[in-house]
Length: 504
Image (cartoon, rainbow, N blue to C red):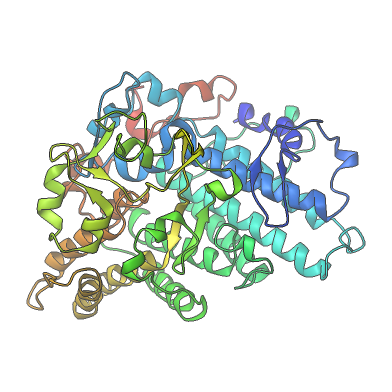
């Protein structure tokens, strides 16, 4: 852990790498001068730069290494899509082998998340100590300060939530160290304590944030109460089902907490499902149903030339990409889940290559040299939470509570909304059969949004899709990732993930 905390010495340098314009663009820039602490944290401009840097660090953490957010959440559920071999070993994760050297040194390394956490800790420490006079350029210094602290709590909670689902036990750092070189080495904290920290941070954020945004440029891509309620709902369902995998019975206290959390979000958030006629606008970003997104927009020159969406595209969508996409949807996925009239099938996929179908949810291509169609960038935000996700989770909650009719009604509502000729769930199905239908619906609605593998784990429907995960391996928590051995060099307190002991 010490090698992670040492990164804090670099974080101060990053505080001015991001400039915030009137539209709050999160443009990642190289620093011209490294600020000293005595010249920083003096005014609200410094605070805005630090917070913009915090979002940029989280974006870097989840997009680094072949868009790790999607590798963890979607790619390892092999029967959804296929990664073709190109020499980097990514295809190995689709067989449940996380020990390829490339994967160990990249996807098994959590350092980048701790950079974001370190920035959150700095903001909480430094902004918390700032006076109203230092923030006097703001219309309401107290509200500005509270909003900043709330966002920092949310981003710290989100970083830990992403890690606890991938590694389980992870080191917990909540202090901003003035001297990172002498910061303590830390062991992995039990996942139950990590999840309690996430819950506490969410509650603190909720008390500090509002439902609306003072600046329209902040909408969806910065945290508010809605973002935090969405994170908290996912945390409760994960904790309800994954704290003790020796049993398949969920903890109904957490299930009920998820239920009330989502109810509050839906009733007070002001979100609305995107009209199906504008289906693809949801994935460009900032739609009416967006709750929290990572900004990857070319409107602020932050589009991506290495996004997961681009790996599904070919020459038809991006000049110079060739005929065959690197990733493609497993053809049987369509046969098992969709009708030809489902809007999500018609607008979300291209089956021109029947043996290598493409997901085109993320295909908003903008050329920086449009005249010659050069320098293509995808301008599609990373959708972390949206309303449809929350509404479908209500069906899962109903099934955990034994309320099968409510779950059926929610699933059928989605099918009627998206398909003029829907195949509806029959009221005579058992709870387990309705759970199968629920997972089918989640896979259609949330394809390539970083959720599918976690959905399968929570609902215990992983055996239907993840061939490499038998029940025996699941009970041993063999879905968690190992820790990159490089992280052990400077921290003897770290322990390898239990399932991977002797395998890495």
